[in-house]
Image 1 (tube, helix red, strand yellow):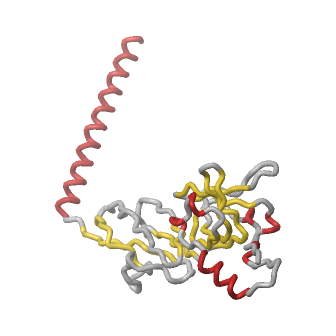
Image 2 (cartoon, rainbow, N blue to C red):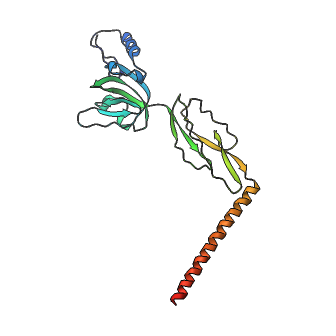
Image 3 (cartoon, rainbow, N blue to C red):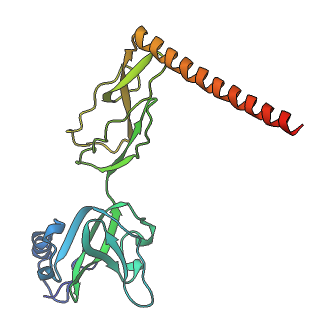
Length: 239
């Protein structure tokens, strides 16, 4: 019999064993984007964790397409009413799961989707806890790891200098050092906090700093006084 994978449901024109068809579809489904090639035309795909590099757009009767991050493959649809979930609701930067069929236009590979949904992710934020930099939050796919940011810095005070001690799960000492080798296993968003080691500045260094500032201040004052005297002399000459 003949069949179609429209909306993932077999459409029969002749009597056929549905179970056999479903098993054939599952067996031939491509689940890794690296296996989507120009030789994969007409094959069915089920892909997870794709990051959109653009929103869906297009003109006229042409298919609406969206690009993917780090891939030349495009997602496409002709009529959003035939797609499970509205593709226009998905934005640049979203992680999505899709199913569909592979189509080849010249050398361009497009996946004509029949379903699209949000991938499971967690958002990780970074609290510098008095540090200098700003670190962007990360959206992490479930099963992936948080990318460790570069170590931040913190300005010294009059009495203390600071060195970075690591990223912790709590702002106070009740938390633990975060393990960046651990995969994210929950969709709960969370924040990592910078902790700092405080080193008291030796008294000798503090006095040396004060002495240096005092010396700079004296020289500056003396310079101003000299300029004021010069101005007075000029004014006296004109009088």
